[in-house]
Length: 339
Ligand SMILES: Cc1ncc(C[n+]2csc(CCOP(=O)(O)OP(=O)(O)O)c2C)c(N)n1
Ligand SMILES: [Mg+2]
Image 1 (tube, rainbow, N blue to C red):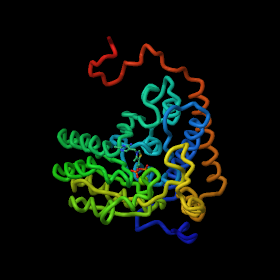
Image 2: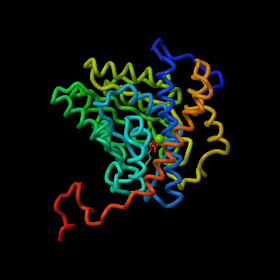
Image 3: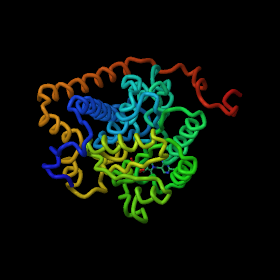
Image 4: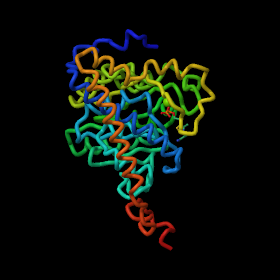
């Protein structure tokens, strides 16, 4: 548990953490936070169908990693993927339309929360099937390698996901073929309503990655500066041709697994105690201590709120897709839709 002192910790290591650069990251984190609050509300108000998995409390991982990527780099995400998409540059209005199932959504309003993709910013997609994003990300990295392209792929997984087989297939393949891949494990302590540790043997995600001879670094995933530095270093190694790398980010899921989750499985006071280490407040304190005026910080939060409110209104006003297009732009194996 980080103490109050940790809130104002100096930038990790000697990386040039210019306050203006960190301010930009703070703004993206605020945008993710506001999007996630609205995503939950869209479920409550009946605008979105299916499950909404919020990433509130995990924003520093998405932003710390994706800021170190180029627009041409690619990521693959998972069921808790809104933050990853926003951090990689996806448009929040198109994402909101996707949640609402409307025309103009990132996947034409047909995919919803767990299928947000935006190839134009290197967001290859999200996936509700745990660990299958790893094998897909590895496939993308294999393509990059075969074509000799100068770009990398990042894959986000949860801690619970490291107990699934495709995770190991992916790690093995990535190492054997020396692929330009960063695997990011967002270790929020939970797999649905289960404490991940009680269902996980051995020394945890980083140890498992090292078993494949993949270098692994563990960081405080709620410390943006630490994530930024670690991700920057690992990505530099990948660009340098050193093969796959693994980032194990310790974080916390401040909300339920999905929107209707009442968190009854948590000890009283646990969520409130953990909130003290949430990443946005921490980096905001650091920015204030490093010369960013309070008005600029509160202005950034207000701007994020306004952008998401506008995205909400645009989504609400957008039409639903025409049913006659239900089978266009989708994978079609020829079965039985066309009669
Ligand atoms: C193959 C598969 N099994 C089970 C599920 C149901 N499920 C959805 S999320 C989840 C827990 C995932 O935990 P973790 O990987 O730690 O990610 P987090 O939700 O904590 O971000 C489970 C079991 C699923 N989506 N896919
Ligand atoms: Mg988890």
